[in-house]
Length: 303
Image 1: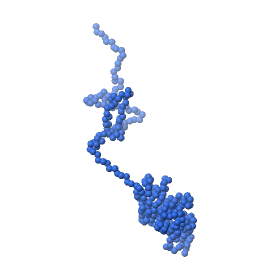
Image 2: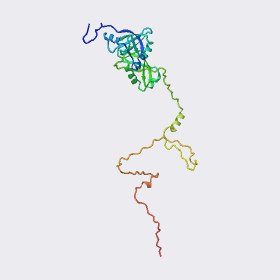
Image 3: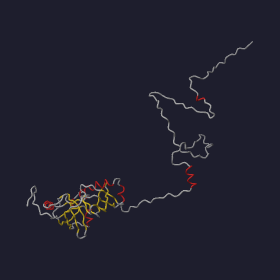
Image 4: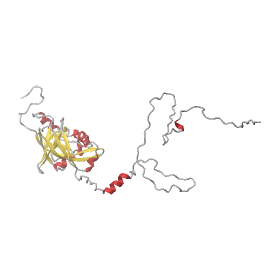
């Protein structure tokens, strides 16, 4: 049977893609960091030909199974350029599947639910040095297509490799993370210990009162230094220092009546303790002093 708009004849529905390949790491292809730092594999062209004849659901997702070790994981596909009978996968995926170069692996196409939640556990405390781990992880997961519980994924950030264990995924043990809105949570890294809380000891009342009276040595104090005499004597300088209260300096009051291009002299008045007005409180008068003469005036004598 042929359908309109299809190049290849369709196969009966209900058939799945299931093949066995020789598995090799991506390093066999040369410098392919785009594959090594992600969760997608490279398959042969014959796999694409078979997939196009089946009723598969896009995006193409696969389950890889190592029957000898009873290990499995899920992945996507990046290219169909591998040699016939071979597939190339990231090295971290080979470690999860306990595979060696050239081992047989079974590949089946699957349909996975869209991820809504995932929980990861960093494998080293260095992960705590990342300022925004969620943003870094979001950028790293763009090269992945699936997440499987108990997988140990790797990604590179600032020329350093980080490993994360997938502890939990929802709504299933294997989920698709392509074009999804997923909530992320982190478990404490391996080897991480909570810092011990130091409880303050109860202080005696006398010591607390003394601390309240004594000024804080670390805080700012006005005129805290000592004076020195030019003749080297220490007379009057050996008196014990008195505690200086830490009073914040008073701020001046701005002159709101200031006019541009003018100078204002502010004179302060002082009050005498007995209530009398000091000479400085009198109104200022120009040239109000008394004159003095250098030549003495002659007094007329009376006869």
